[in-house]
Image 1 (tube, rainbow, N blue to C red):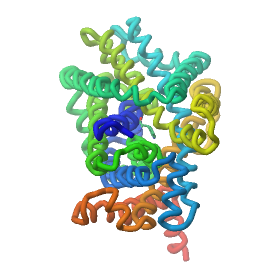
Image 2: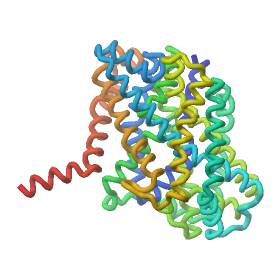
Image 3: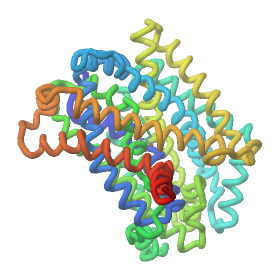
Image 4: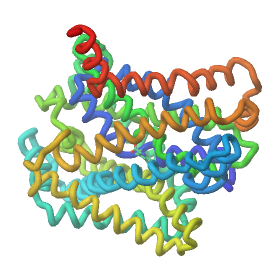
Length: 453
Ligand code: TRP
């Protein structure tokens, strides 16, 4: 059991706040045109992500096992069917896929700790930071080494089962990351093009928004909150019966959204002041932030600290990605934690090699959404997470009976509970479905048929 409500909030925030907030949110916002994308993302976070997070916690606390066993158990209890365990299974596979490319990017953050500490960014211009980033990603043996180190760090913690030991560290280091972002915000306000950055982030022009961007925003709402794959369910399994699920979920969602918006407010003013392209891609923050660090007083220290804290945030997230699979192997096949963690870690590592090579040897090997890295990200984040979330909300809203959910949520039967149930039953599943149908071109295809006929 978690020792307290705060311990649970810290653990789930540790999994939620990570590369998704600081690295992915700014770069996909830049790729998808800013304002309108951000609004859709925020709507998805609050109208879909939050009720699904509450659903995951309540299912997890009822099942009190790993996500696969929990979905089987609670599914059998509520509907007599064991098929719901497939949702847990899909989550485990999704976690594998996400961790495989997540670890590669976390490797960049690790590499940047050392570049920062040795003053590589001092006095650099946009072309130079670009060359540093390209130099790193072009060098596949070095990337592979960082990816290996990060996976080893993750396996190490999970194998020893001492994740809880990180709780205390999260308590200090996550606020520290927030404080550092606020310091950077002052830099962006005074030295960056702050007005243009804010404008880009919040002025919405929906006429330019495509259904594909809407799908990316939806996927990111799941990704950044760590929901849709049973990770939060795994944490919920250890939540004491007395802790409030709505309260803890709201706290996590606000912390996560706050950090993402802060990162956006820091990065875009720097991007515009230095003539970088917002749609630069996955390297965006690895170019914009070093530029700022290179110009500010004390930049070497701030930069080193920043990439250290970012790596730590990535580390606590990677634990959440791997834990469902490890818990399942331990409970189902009675493996030791060391065995289970090593096996899962090795599998993820192999998959990650595809992402390592996506930035160099296989950079031109493109299909569907782009490189291997792009495809893993799209399939796991934008398709599997929303699909998992849809099934979880249908399960909590339709399959579980009213008594079970109201008992777990402990919100009474008033407006708050009804709102949750309405969001879980109707809003979340329907919005996900509508976005899937439109972005896949299905709706357009049907309209084409009816126009033609
Ligand atoms: N939320 C994490 C981030 O923003 C990444 C993530 C996605 C995750 N799914 C997860 C973490 C599941 C833990 C568990 O960086």
